[in-house]
Image (tube, rainbow, N blue to C red):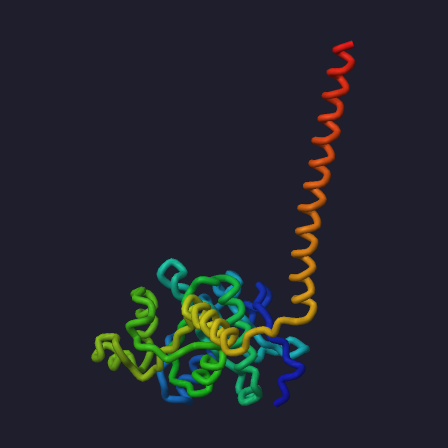
Amino acid sequence: MNNSNLIVREATAADVRFAETITNEMAESAKARGTGIAKRSPEYVKMKIEEGKAVVATTPSGEWVGFCYIESWEHEKFVANSGLIVSPPFRKSGVATLIKKKIFELSRKKYPNAKIFGLTTGLAVMKINSDLGYEPVTYSELTTDEEFWKGCQSCVNYEILKSKERKNCMCTAMLYDPVEKAKDEATNLAALAQANPMPVTREAKEFAVYSKIYERFMRLKQFMLLKGWRKNAGEEKRTSNIFLFW
């Protein structure tokens, strides 16, 4: 399926009509894969759409294609892009990548300082996350918010999570840390600049030379003007003394 005509955008209030279809497809997809997924209700999906924290993909005619939403934890310190789902006829078309990119952009816009994380068993999602800058991490680097972990209770693997004392499970944890990314970029730029210093151009050399000449000229001009002013002031003083003598 070609995705060139598909529309991937921030969800609007009109998209609440897709809520039940989305949650049904989430449940069917989890059942088909035989892996765990936290259960979502149509009401919850509607709330995310109305809050402006969701992305949808549709055909030009308005047919639903895919969905993803944002959750925030620990007073917006952590953000998760959750519930990624694509309608079966449009799978393996690349639309999931487009949705993930769009929800990632929305997350960065709404929560620029938050760490963005995800838990997934899907290799395709892991690849997309990696391309966006996520890195695999231990569960200890994720949010400690109890509400987040309660969402795992409807997962078929929840007993494994409990037995591992929430330190590990079937899902792979991945994290995007904007602070660490900024540090990495700064380090890379510094290393690049050191390895490839910018050449000094002829124009730059000429500017440096002529700017010094201009500076000297202005100092000389200022000196001459000041000297002339002092000379004129002295003559006026002598002249005034002569008039006073007479």
